Image (cartoon, rainbow, N blue to C red; front, side, top):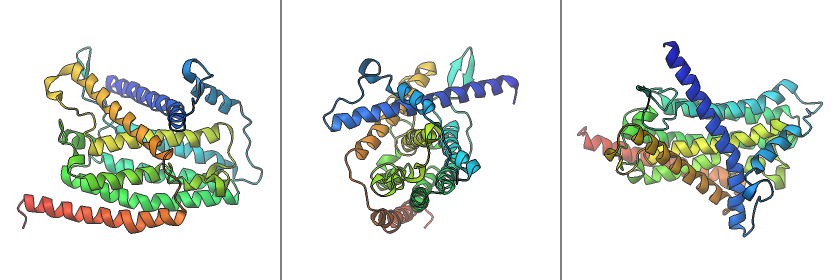
Length: 342
């Protein structure tokens, strides 16, 4: 790899990480506004026009708060926990294809840091490692409520990752590739997987809600039972990393949903465009889908009540996994019949 390509990739990494952080930061503002809209309130309106500086005020508050570590905690693991959660949330953005190739000064620039041929497998692997951040943070706090929240989070993620993985296998079977860009290109125009796999989409979407610990699956942070859950003992930016990681994960999950089921950066009539016009429109189309799903995540949070933990486990093990397996079996049979294997 020549130095020019390395510099290009480093710049792209910086841009993607910055955009991910900005979107996660302003997702907190947007969620407050959405909640206010549902509850007939105004929401943030003091920090800047329409409250648009509220995320900056929250960030300054997080940095200025006292940063303490409980005396009986495992100090190194206590610090490591939120770092793992933040790292695993951000690193997945590196292999997401954000749009068609862009031409800059005569050279083609791929709007994707790395096109792994096992891209979706990489994402599933990184997301499964993210549970260690929550588990380490809860255990290192030396607080029984934090530990209960961490155990809930780990059992929840394990159960829902199984159904999510089966759903991903179904899409991979249809596409014939683990590469995210191949999955997107296979849905060129309006040939989106949602039209062929609506059941798979519902299972994956519910699992994504549970994976990000969003309501109605926010049992690891259940205030009525666990105070604050796995991050009860955290303050300042250590707490901020845990909270920020949730919003980054919501952003990345929305991007993965758009890629797997809604064509990624594909949009109707894209064959009529070319060059940089196509690249810019594809990026706009992709982010429009992402913002729509972020809104749906927030809509569900402020609409549905929290599940009981036994209901959550029942839904994961006894409902979603069997549905995903049956859907996988049917999909495999249809593909085999279409290819004349019987």
